[in-house]
Length: 100
Image 1: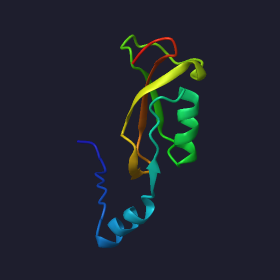
Image 2: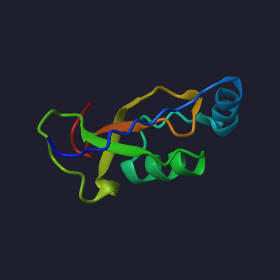
Image 3: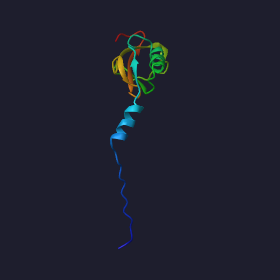
Image 4: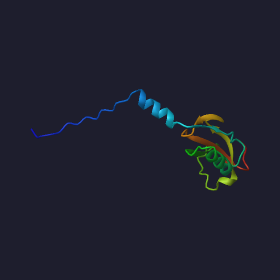
């Protein structure tokens, strides 16, 4: 039989580690972005400290929002309120001439 090396990684966690994690989690108020054009909504979310942004076609057609200024936000996840700033924010939008 051949020689082999078996390695094992052990991570230790304790109260100090979880306290550090809490200190790193900054929270901020995510504004209500519903009704804004998609570009303005993204700008406001980023101004509030939220940078993990995604946008989806609220019509269900799977279209890409190439020009954000002609899309209107119908809903958002999570809703407006205080959240950790690393929370992913999804904006669901339709083209300006469509209804939510």
